[in-house]
Structures are given as C-alpha cells and as structure tokens.
Amino acid sequence: MNPIVTPYGEIGLSKKAQVTQMFNTISTNYDLLNQVLSLGIHHFWRRKAIDLLKPYQPKKILDIATGTGDFAIEAMQLKPNKIIGIDIAEKMIVLAKKKIDSRFHGNDREVIDFQLGDSEKLLFDNNSIDAITIGFGVRNFEDLKLGLSEIHRVLKNKGAVVILEPAAPTAFPLKQLYSFYFKHILPQIGKIVCQDPHAYTYLHNSVNAFPQGNDFLQICQKIGFQKTTFIPLTFGICALYLLEK
Image (tube, rainbow, N blue to C red):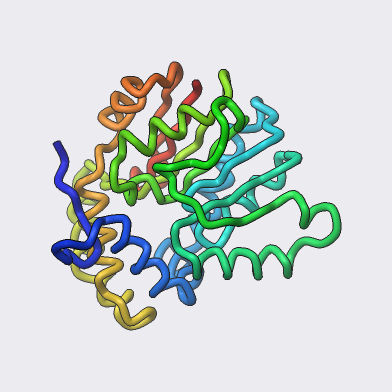
C-alpha cells in the first residue's frame, strides 16, 4: 500500500482538507505556475487526451478537479451539449468561472458549468456521464479506490475517462535529473511565485507515491474498467490514461 502524502503533514487534518487549503492558497498563480513549470507543454498534453475522446462523441462531459477550467475549455472542441467542471477548492471555481465568462458568450457559455464538488461523492446518477476528464487530480484523491469507483458508477457503459498525471521517468539520466529538479528546484520556484513551497514539495512527494503505469491500470481494472491504456508523454514525465467502462 502506498503511503498517504499530504501537503502540510498536519496531524488531525485530512488529506482532502489539506489539498483544499493548498489549492485555495495557490489559486491566483496556478495558471502562471503551470505555464512556467511545464514550459507550456501542459496544453499539448490536454490536447492529446481530448483527441482520445473524439471517437466516443460524448455529449455530457464531467471534468473532475477542474481547477481553473483549462481541461473543460479544451473539451469544447468535442462539441458536447454539456460540460460540468467540479473542484473542491472554491477559489479555483471562482477563477474558472471568470475565465469562461471572458472567453465564451451566448450558447457556448451555457455549455460549461462549474460547481464545488467532491470526486469521492459525485452528485450524479448512475450511468449518466458520457466522458470524464481529470487533469493532474487523481493523485490528490484521499481514497483512490473510492474516487475511481465513483467515476465508474456515474460513467455510462462504453463511456471513457482520460486522466493526466505527472510521472517519474525511469530511464537514465532523465530519471536523476527529474528527481533533482522536482525535489530541490521546483519548491524554490513555488516559494518565489506563490509563497507556498509546500505545494511543490507535495507535488514531488505525491508523484513518487502514486501508482504509475501498469500499476495504476491494475487498480482501474479491479474497479471494473474493461479497457485500460497507458500512454507516456514527453519522455515519460506525464502519464496519459484511457479507461473505458
């Protein structure tokens, strides 16, 4: 069993509460940090994920851990009737709504709706969602199996899930360079830009603790997903997963 990694290590405060606190704290600079730390590559990763959903032609999409809404925006190219983005951090939802209000108008704006929501207690009916997107949020689940079970429950039969997660490369010397960067340099950047070095120390620790590649797929298979695919991106620093119910 993988250890439970939390942002602040506060005894008596759940991982969910600490993750919520962390994302509310860094929300203002969240987009800038993603852009700087990934050198803009995160846009490419999301496009690759959305491309995998095109054959499914989803009409109702749920974006879990929506953050400031970038995955929901990317999903607009699928021409769905509805996209619902949920997040446990209220300040992230506020920023996501402002972003959408500035970019979409009229009928397009009505397609996307953002709301507070808990991935482990999804307020949707069984078999009611055509596709689910999750960008860099699954490793933040307090109970991974419960969160995946909820995703499986609300997803329609033959529906699909795409998940993006940071990953640790395994090949020399990228593995060593990656580890040094995430452990020593990334927290310093986080401290300068968002005044919360805990967020990026947590990023390194949570990536290391999260089951990766086929280990993650095995968990998804036990939950009940029938088709599971793992695609490493950008020399293995990002993992793209496709799950089908």
